[in-house]
Amino acid sequence: MLNSLNIRKFARYFESVMKKYIGICFGLLWLFTSCNSYNKILKSTDYEYKYEAAKEYYMLGKYSKAAVILDELISIMKGTDKAEETLFMVGMCYYGMEDYETASHYFTTYYNSYPRGVYAEEARYYTGKTLYMAVPEPRLDQTATVKAIKELQIFLEYYPQSKKNEIVHNMLYDLQNNLAQKEYETAKLYYNLGPYTGNFNFSSTSPQANANNYESCVITAQNALKDYPYCIQREEFAILILRAKYQMAMQSVDEKKHERMRDAMDEYYAFKNDYPESGYMEEANQMLKKINKATGGNISEDED
Image: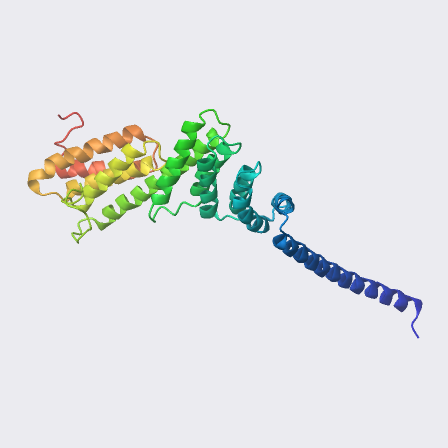
């Protein structure tokens, strides 16, 4: 026979099992009801009803469901007072789904269709931001980065007093650094190749076409500093230029050695002046010592 203690244990066990069972049943019922409700909306020809349902899905963060409905409503709502909001919302849905390419398409369509629309500023901002979110790693082609920069600069031109301008400037800074990093990796590749003289795919008009790899490193790094003067890689470019000029000097033929030693020494003092506390200063000092040793100290800092 079951005593009172065993009965209570059994009752608690039965209660816990039933709670789980009821929870599963309610979950399945909600899912079934939700799916049926959504299917009903999709099949409906009441476009006002669909529009309100899409807005509700959007507010709940159910962007994929909202986007399906809104995609259908774009052409239907065209010419009505809901057309602008429909187009903008579908862009925001794809943004919420992290489908930045599709989102950018809808935001661009919006501001081209409604240049003075209620959401024109937001649409231009999110066009730039979606492109920003989708930029590739620096080692890859940077066409998308250039496009994002252009779009964000246009935003600043259209809305110079926008509250979003600080965010836009920060995005532009990140994008410029992305391009600078691409150039840094190219310059570093040239440096690492050193005296290797394999074939490169340069046109005859390229500044690197008739240059050795160290020269190509210097040219690439110097151009990057001109194009991106505020990039975070400035110090990295500077030490790379010094290293390349040092290698060119040390490996130079006799008739060019003095000139290149002088150039490397000038670069050393420029680096020291710009980055006196640099973590690379010990390396730079060692290069200067070797230059002085190689020239017998015959090149002075003040030599013309």
